[in-house]
Image (cartoon, rainbow, N blue to C red; front, top):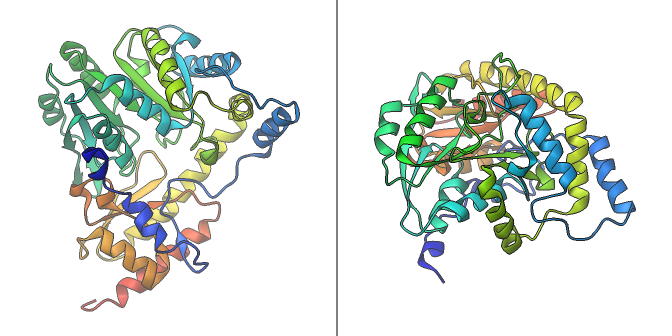
Length: 391
């Protein structure tokens, strides 16, 4: 077996979750998904497709109708410099598949790759699987919020750098790039010839007021030929995590290469799943705004409750579905997360799953239908803290 694979670290989020799966007394907030099922009209579209017998292979890049619908959806949001054509769209088996395809397309063995951390670990692992030489630039916490040292990032991106990996709004911190920061990075990467792989799957889950009701995107600034691959997913803002359906927006010259790679990975996305995606896009106005409004309530409920606990450092995230907080007296987040499962019945993700510099932090997914689950979870955390020696 390849040494690179042997050296990959297994998911510490899964490690914590495995300690509590099957326990009905555990309040689980470790995974990044809502506990609300996919809306009925989206599920029905898949049922109808199956009833029509649509159980055969599809085009590698996705159904033409879905690619066109995605192109129209993205153009309405980010087409200020011109419409985004369907020739730039690749439908994928989830956002993580899109990110892996990007790594396969862009990263050669030994290619220098820069990633901004803390970061969902799959993105770094994918580059390393392809043999990339990954260098990380860390956000830094200021009063519970994580901020970017732009100069440090610019210094790390040289003409040798093949790919810059960014996730904003960010999992786990909630950090989001500003439009000015995106322009600075885009201009710099144009000069160095560096590809930007932008994981923007949380763009709809943004709580600041904007013209198009979503987070700033590189697509608002880029030309069609820029070295930019933007990854999206139906998972978060359409409540479709288990469907495994996503897409990429890329320069048209890359689309054919992604078609080849898709053939060698998954061949195609199932047709009935794609029809669910078509229904989701057609009905997005009745799903996504409601999801975001509820998540704002969840965020405010959880963050305010956490801020009232002694020894907790947390700031309100601008985007995403996570509160990322530090327990100042507990620097080993993996051990703390395991203790919280065993001793408090509270399931959270450990910060060091996302970067070594995030050890001592914990991620709490607040995408809960029931706000009472969030307050109950905070009470469990409060009770656990009060029963620790020295408190």
